[in-house]
Image (cartoon, rainbow, N blue to C red):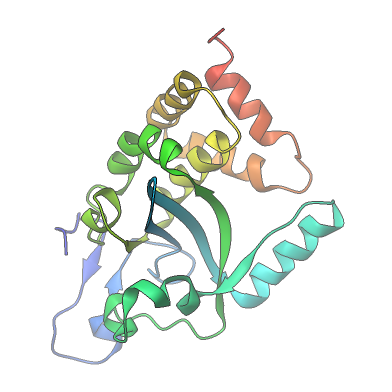
Length: 213
């Protein structure tokens, strides 16, 4: 694994099962990673899929709220998100965390064109996190678990870039998200996912790309 920054922790190999967990910073879930980024190869290049990891009941409640407003949310058991690329030893590849009664709430899947446009912002966001980022930044298939701050930044970028067709606008949005503070990313993530703010993603794109004619 990549080196861990000071905000992350991993415990010695000896000790209890709890001691051996890799900590993904501080979070309401006790250091548990709260996003996963998966890369799969296609004929045209790599695709990325980002999921937020939530207790199943919370994921279902969010889906229900969105559906009441005519929007949708795909949720999947966490193990099923990566079972085709992780092999048999899921527990070690999940850094000791178990995921019974947890689900992945899909943020977005990006095609190879958008993957290339977001390479820099993704690399910067996940640099120094506990996972091995090479698994999702280079060729082949793989996944990386992410702490909340990195996942929120990527979620803003993924949701913002998804419908954009022009490469110059994709890159402008990526640069804008890369320059945001963590607080700004949390603000825009809340705007983009809230059932009461259906135009949050459009407002983000206007802010970061409308100067390009």
